[in-house]
Length: 247
Image (tube, rainbow, N blue to C red):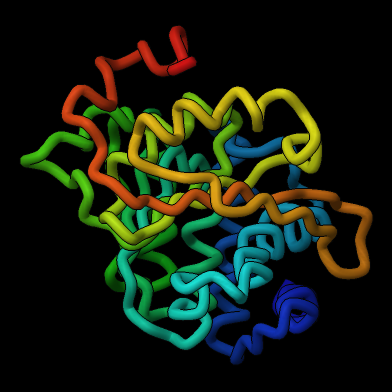
């Protein structure tokens, strides 16, 4: 895995040193080990994990014209929250590749958070925290509301719902970037999400389609800029954003 992830990262113009590549290898080993006990991912073969989880997470650098992503590439210590992080994608690969990031990971399943905490410990990562809870739980004014430069998510959810989960965490002037399937760029989901994004204080600035280098893995980023504070009524109570997306 060490040489494999170095090669995949290099395709994205990311240079990993030996310590970073060893961390990716340990991460992969922990992922395999824990996946036998709890359902973390259906993708377990080494090459597939390297491309479809690790490289895909690092693919954020393809947005190198974005002001926040430029800061990440430059090694600045910006604050990121990964909502619905699951097995730690994209947060942990980004943290390994860009160590100065200050990262918060949020997931609703306690067993996954236990896994994430072991990864953090075993890899010796600093300035990264895993929290157990729903996205709606931590977005209040006395918690973490509007305190992040960037929110990211690879969670499988409708963009309207995902926006309600993520945009409240973003500072005015910051960004929410969703990792979506390639179909998002051409489908109804994009158009149906525009009202929700606007209501929540954002604007869909860009949808960038991409294929991971030397693969047929077609994806896109939905890039939302936060230009106004999110109204206090959002996010609504737990479960409502998924059952009744803003429309």
